[in-house]
Length: 222
Image (cartoon, rainbow, N blue to C red):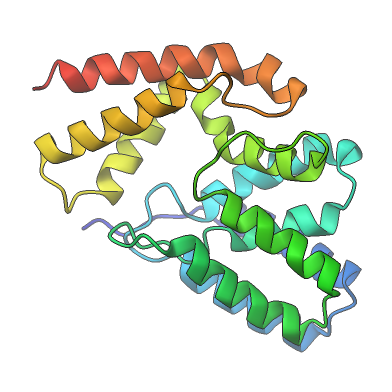
């Protein structure tokens, strides 16, 4: 298995956002650095090809872009950092285990119960990615950030889908194609991939083109 290769620019970008976040939360340098070590160690595991620090970087870039529309930016930023902190492609409880690690951080950081519950809800929501209640705009933006990759240009999407395949290399080609096609078709059957009007306008049309093309590519290999 080829180890995940990360650029220094990505590491610095994500680290600087972590430092800014923990400064806003008034955490001590020791707590901030200790938890950065945890985050870095998890997101640079060798089996991560897509769900890596680069994924966190992409979400943070969207976070920066839409920050003025976010009601509780610290909660959304925490959800970005912790939502994939546990990622085992062979497991089905990654989100639940990610919440456990987040709760350890939340206790050490003395987060309020409202923030703790909000971030927990965001992490768990990535398990199914159903359309959210649009009254909860922070949750909607967070979930849309997580799916924004689906609506990128064709070449970017192809690179993403190839990385996902490498993360699931424990499946043979036939099993992977069947499972991946089912996931993509479920997404296509939803009335909309994105909950916020802004993300829908920017990404929806291209996302559907990308997924339809991926299904065609998968089916052509049967």
